[in-house]
Length: 281
Image (cartoon, rainbow, N blue to C red):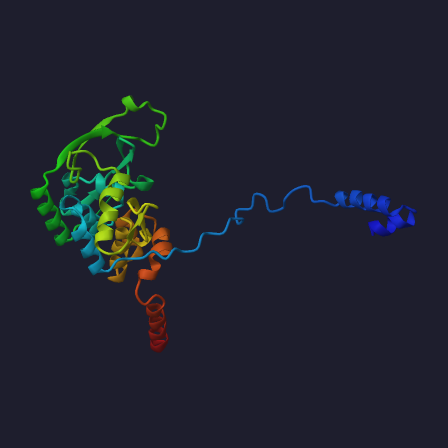
């Protein structure tokens, strides 16, 4: 319409284009009509397909670990602890038949500190007899060590380091020198070499043939995979996602998005129940 009106006015080609642009600008929507709508959300990431270990894989890795660190693998697979939670776990956290997860250990370089677990969620979960026996055996061979570190509170992120509260914890597992475990050093010096000894990953070499502190194929075999294994065993045994989320310190949504493929007969049980309902009706 605007182009026709411009031609009727006797405008040239270049003038017609300019006139048309001016007209079109007048019809632009001044505001985004979707702005402020609660229903407008970015798409969610697709569910991940986390892998769980079989018993033989866990056994091979556990045996390949130095005996000092095998209790960490036990806590990961039988209690679903994250690495920092396992590093910070204390024998005093085993109380009244429950295993408590009250803190995690974090490190940057040589600096260590305690803080609440992820999402500030402390939790407790029942203890398998086998895990309790493994922990007691570990403590007989490697006595626990008291370690005093600052407590970092997320509500006070700018507090000076020396002003933070000092907390003493009797750690289940430390280094051979009685120091807190640093995640990166543990992975490089202990965890990945154990994976290599178990035949699960391959160490990479430099150009001159000397070995590097790097391995190929570690993604399915990180310490965190023990947590996935815990979830798979729990859900596979029929434990509800609500209970598993409580034990793992996760949300139910996270458990369903991440671990739902571990639940046996997904959809089949509901279909059978619906058929039974229709038969009775």
